Image (cartoon, rainbow, N blue to C red; front, side, top):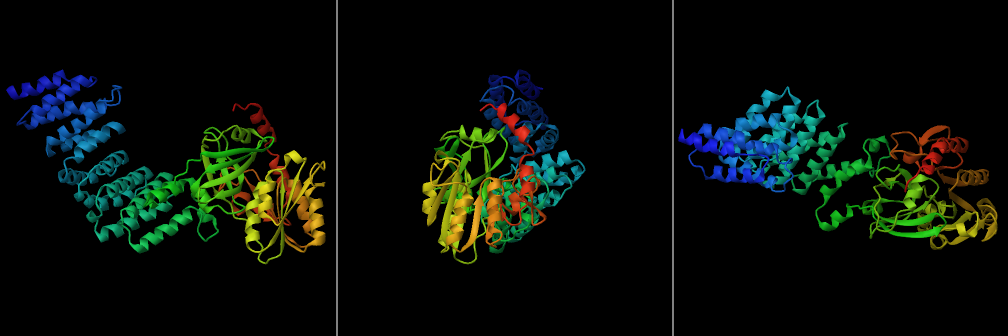
Length: 547
């Protein structure tokens, strides 16, 4: 009777909403000796109510007291494990974590009990998820014996069960020393987890990628499996040697969850940390700016002709933008933005030091380069001037003579002439009003070049009428001519189909198969119509814009 009274005093005085009351109750409970099973059970039941109130008191002290409660209940021994498991199965997500940690502090006894009970709950997906999560809180090497069961249970029809199983395995890999994993277990783990990389559910792929990445970082993979994983990563990122639809089954940003786990040093980690911060901003001409963006992963892989999809703010639309340059060492990519609609106006309102919400890339195929050397012409109309610079540099590096032609309405609309001069052997300027260079269109300058040079290749980037005119001029001369199609885009990976264009009588996707196509095969009439499909909506968005 005396023993029961000492426990009842603590229980009756406990107010789980009061930090002071909880602190006093825990101190009194820790001072008790030689507790009976009934006493331990009563205290466990009362004290565990603290777990349900941690996030409702508004006090920063309560989470610390909850941890103290975890340890105290664990001291009551394995007799309390059945009660803890019962609570785990009915508790909310946050409270279940505390119950799970307390159970995990019981060590091997907790592992054996959960493994024995797992089969009893296989028909209840919610129970399975909560039970599997408990394993992630164990820190002793003996918990590796639960991994085969976790992997077997992960092969489940409910993707949330699968994701939790992979998550728990990944947590154990992260916590335990490599010596806890036998060679056989490592091999079996890799084979089992690797299969989930192609799962149709994003959460499953994500947890599989993270778990494999953690295994790689811990040195748990054989050389053969490391190579297999690396090739798969390249495929996921769309950087393998194959040009097929397989690389589009997962958007590139999802691959970022994979990337950090390949990091073995701070330098490597920096290469895969992208802030999308605006490093520099400079005015090129009215309503047109040059931006340099912090994006080292993109800068490492980008090639001439490829593009980005950018979302300046969380509520902005995603728009494709050509890349005019990059610095691989500094991890920066450069774009030119001309304000013609809502989103481009939002971008141009941003300043140095601001951050873009999203920058996805590199997207699309690199520009096709000539297979023989000779005279090549790159033509830029308006904002297209920046886009032709990377390919001009590539062709010049291959030993070609490169002539650049740029066009604008008037002299003050010309952009990046100095940069183009550095990339080309010769640059010709045209303006509609004759205020700079040749008065006329880019086709007038091209006609002069064709009269004096044997041209083997032409690339044109700019307005649709300009690209069409260039293509018609070179068609009779059978000069390889490529144009960059700025079709309407949404996802940028070829899955949505919004950017479909007709090339050679076949449907192509500008974001995936392009953006550069044979200008002699492009249906420009169809392209022009598609570009005007949402003109009304674009105007409404611009008119109602709030920057």
